Image (cartoon, rainbow, N blue to C red; front, side, top):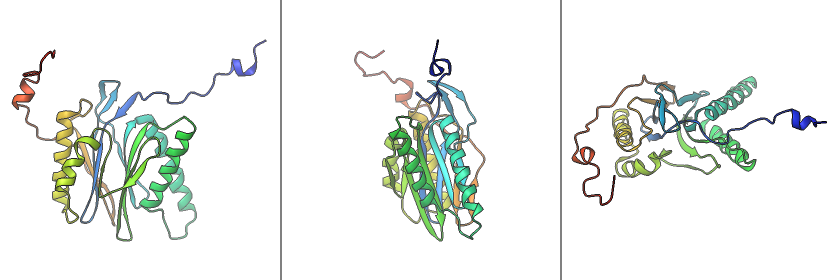
Length: 236
């Protein structure tokens, strides 16, 4: 006779990411935080979805961006909805700031990693509370840090050098958007999972604003783009 454990299937977890989003780039500017991501969702190596929103406001003071598995991001949003609801139920005139939300996310990601059941995401959390700007990130195994500019995925390799060269603490909104567009254009040229439909959002002391998605102006007539294998011995 089969045991109950044989007849009832175990709960299945994310063992491998299926639908994923690529890089998120964020920076501090004069009045708050700016964040950018494209809206692509890749099913393996196929760009299956073109309108996935990966930037979300969290509570009154925070803005979250995610790369990685989209279903796990939705689970994280559910956790955060419960956290903000519980915080609001106290009705004590206080609300969770970006530092507290980032702290919570680091504990969630590290806890799931220790259970060998990670959430397959890299998260960027930024916000402003009481005039203090905050920007940090955490990856799927709980590694986290704060900085004046952060990026996930391939953006961590391709856009951070640009940000180190061109970022300064007195960036205006227009300068910050222009710098993010430059970073997203580089990723569009170099990241096969990127799509030319980006969304930029900001958060200031007044709250979060998500701007409508749009496409970047691009130029594909570079000689290296036309003949990528010229001079490459033994290439296809």
